[in-house]
Length: 464
Length: 112
Image (cartoon, rainbow over all chains, first blue to last red; front, side):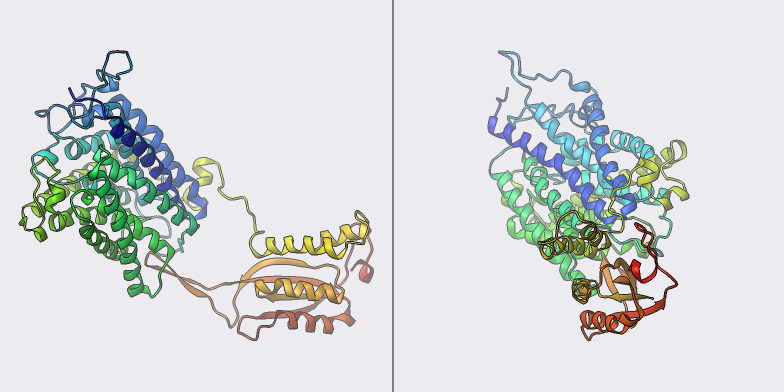
């Protein structure tokens, strides 16, 4: 019986909190990009994922994903319902009892369940960006619950569970979720964008980001939390987690540079939204690859997707689908690139830590086998997720309804879905506010000798 | 009596206001506004989507003046708001029938 490792457990618990923070981070990343009339709806679509997915997770999600993870011969397609409600897992609280450990990590299953829960939360949350400004909140909530149940939970088993068939049978290296999280969410986003249709005024009305600082803030929170996502996925706090941490940082930085370079070539300017998007594209791409490549490899696993994703966000205009905040261009394309680049850059030293029979990449003498395996894994997750997400969206849209009425959409989903307005600044902002402040101060000093409270001085203040 | 309306660059508001106070103007009204004249807007890019922002932010200042002050006030405002570049704005004068001070009910020049 494997014994508890307190160092590993502490790291997994801390990582869980880091990954939770990514979802509000994502909410602000997306929220800044929508128009002022739908920012609250965007925040809420993300926030509700935390609430809904957590309940589904403790009831049956953990079990469907990882219920048989400790059984080497367990079913490769789902984790069964043996641990539903987190039952039959020893907590180790009672004296003399030992917590049930996840594999050989020395980490209690309860800690791994906390960690993996945060992945299950953010994956459907990623989809929300594709259907901004027009989604019915209750329809979205139902969709999230259904989506994690029939898509995320089983796919997480395929990819992350030691006996999952993509992991064990296909020998795919996907350390932290290039397939299970990003391709999965990207495919779901594409399906939802197609089912819900375009926003009123798509490509005609200006839909500028209403708060670019939010976008940058959200990207920074994502970046911070992503260290838990990737380095936490080691489930141990040793050498592998350390390399993964560094690789995550390296790829994110080169992706920022890659995106900005592509943007400079295309439009002649380096934008803030571009830098933030580049960081996210790099984080997405390094997610599957962070434990398979060396820091030199990570340079390319960031740079290439950063550059390409800047072009990929134009796909929606080319093919005329309204993926509002580019979930396809960043997460689907970035996830595919990261997953495939492993087939080129996987380094023998890093790969030796994998016990699923994975090989080194094309550039490291491993031949083409790993690239083909990666492509197979990516293709299976994309196909399953896209088809089922599409059907699911059709069903929810036909029953509960996923799209608001045209009138509600024009007024704005913040008001019509949530009865709230994000900003109560009226028209008095910027220059006028500053002028008002400076006038009050100037009046106070120049009228120093005047009697305070007289009719005249009152009148001056009012007039100004 | 006249209404002087000036549309100037936002960051010139402070200078105009200070100059008017020095001249002895007791009150004015300011609005944020936007528009264009010879100075056209600019282009913004967000993730490859280019937007042309046609309207340029400006500040619109309104003040009431007695006829004999108008010429001087026009000079004061123009001098304070001027940068010499395109987009400095416009000032125009319109006749006013009468003015009422709400607090006292005074009319005309007394209400200024």
